[in-house]
Image 1 (cartoon, rainbow, N blue to C red):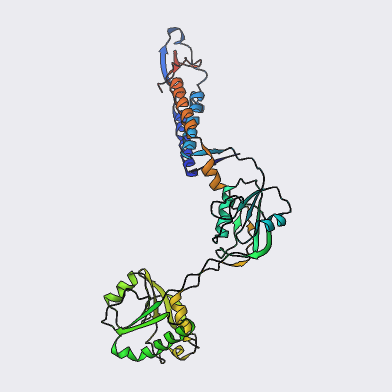
Image 2: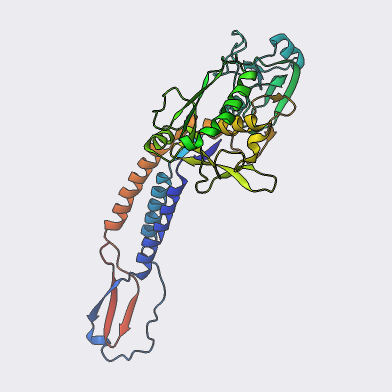
Length: 403
């Protein structure tokens, strides 16, 4: 059971509590002087002393409470009655036989579910498709009550990871059984078309690009197509990568705006160093341009300006430059992917915000009742004060001002 605030910044309105407090401190009762003949000749012996006092403290208390409730209402409190911790959950990752999972659990009395989207019960058929294990563990940790135990039975090799060990708000009973997660069927690689646009002066550079494409096709037969044309030939929409060996033109700008990757014979501004020579001099940089990416050379695509053209690994370097940074690994051993417990992770927050009961209606009714009570106290007729100031044959009686 806990109380949560959906908009905690609403508590900033508590600063308004200073307004009625200052008003009640600064405000003074009006003094009305009444002349008495019998007191005219009595000398003033004790001069009334002024002291700090709060006028009508009950009214001040009501106003402070009213403003405090309004600030809490702006913070949108919700009440989570909590779900009593019941039987622990046991989730079985794809790639694990249900019988092996139950044997590994040692007769654990738990709610058995598949570690798959929707967390179906194990009475249903085992999921056939690969599942994002790391993401599902975080989702389940957010949905379960904070005090409920969680056990995970996983195969020795896991798929569906995202490059980082899951950080959960609870300790997970991590049990590994022999097996391997089903890998998603890899689609057939799509053909890649390398477009080259050049001026007559750069035609000699084509031999190195042809050699690179030929080396690529030795590993993946007939997957790479070289489209080498003069600079004035329009680019084909089917082109995947671009090598631009000509002055800049609107065609190149449109290529970047489409999100394409192009190797250009100009260094450009900024960017991450991509290739260096033996002396450490930067030969190429990778930088974003438009919606795409630019691979800028420090000079022409010739051995004099780019010595690594003659290296045997230049085709691999060129392919890696066009591919960009490799994706995060999605497969690892179960021991390496075991979730770590982090007390600072508020795993039950999603569950709290989804299932908690808002208190807005109750607070609004209480605010309305307090407002009516405050108006009633503020407008009632005040009683005469029992203090008076006697000065030079007159009496100064306190008279309460109108609210």
